[in-house]
Image (cartoon, rainbow, N blue to C red; front, side, top):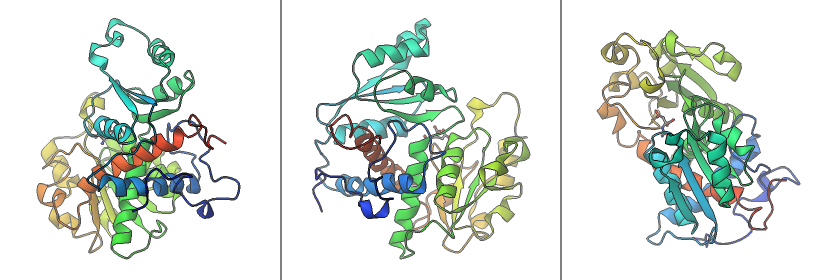
Length: 340
Ligand code: NCD
């Protein structure tokens, strides 16, 4: 393999428009509005880290001397761990702010917390927050790159990127090229409350895929067609001819009141069973961002279906994508090209 510490960046300039070989944004707060080449740039950059992460020695010193603060105001397992591992594998000093033991619990405002972190000269901040827009608010106040690790129902950009990288890797492995055009991706579940769905919609439609969204009416956002997706109420119809099926959890913590009759009825209409999966294309791929509720939105024998389920692959790609984002966004800090 090539040395992960080679400079300039692994991404080849030829794929990108002349004069724009460097990623032109300081923050990654969402995927909406990013150009196709910008998305591909981050996916391409992640490839070197996929390779490194598969080696016994998984360490680069690319971000040596930099401090990254992970501030998660909402629960997380895989995203927090993944960002922590990503920062450490790049040689940065990674600090996790324990929100439960922080002054947030004493009534400190979000902006005051952000200004405190800023005064500690972080070189990047990774923020998860329960309110849509909170990460942008922080990004506008601080001096370093800010990465959104999920804000309310708004966006979860690194999840959208890691899902796209997972799909592209699976296509390549199957000898199907790496073009998203012509792919049909069905996203089913609690679309209304899902930042994962939003980031995936922005990413996949920008890269040329056809995206279908499927949910019971109460969990389908009004005006979703404006995001260039086709909405479905009937899961079987949404699955017909799909290349990729992405299942989402019911986000009970964001629901006030009753959105579905019962988990049993929900599974009956919207759960991905083996029988249902047969309505999609023969070799259709199965994805889920986690955490899964087995037996509700997805059956265990589908989640664990060898050769078809990409769920653990998504987690693997997550570390590589986060390494790529941390590397790319801190290039300017390191005296390299960036934020054109
Ligand atoms: C998702 C999230 O937090 O938005 N999980 C994740 O980051 N992998 C989805 C969810 O919580 O259901």
